Length: 259
Image (cartoon, rainbow, N blue to C red; front, side, top):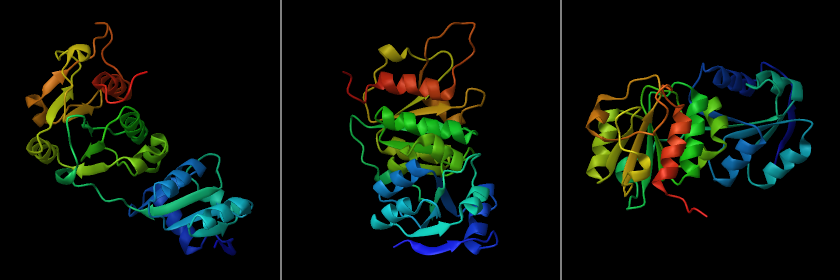
């Protein structure tokens, strides 16, 4: 059941914890803000510590409680002040920091396509990349160490729930990632701005790992050994946004049915 006691103090320990997580002072949990993300987490059976719901959304609180979530009512103004958003949706959940999947245990076959991202500093771009990966049939999403965290609140919002549904490996060293995928028999391909094969004529047979990085950043040295693919663009255009490029390449890989 929802806790009918309404939190009305900014100094409440739970509210203080939310503020610390939203500001980045603490990083031991994830913040899911908004109805869509909370519903995605519940549907995906993610562990949720608690859902904070504005006191004027009592029906929503009851609904989530009936679905098995622990719900705590919070004064709407107090919850809005703790929000990371300009306009608070009146709902926010906390959950444990998800563990990285073990790539050595990931099921791979000839249709498997793993998206590996390196050097992505913008969490919004990272979230969008995970959404693209899920949409075009990737079986896993790998985030190389050194970039934004996939569990950043902005990344989670940008993913529209994809980061809660896809198997995610994060914080892994590029060389270690390449070694594990290589041992699993995955072909490794890197998106190059220039000099790679045309995606429309490339052999996308898997299992395959597609590595992409920020258009302004250097890729890990290990990717120099990989096959390269390059999207043909006008010579007076330097590059594509990484999410756009990944979308084109993942579509070209053909892991989803085309109607």
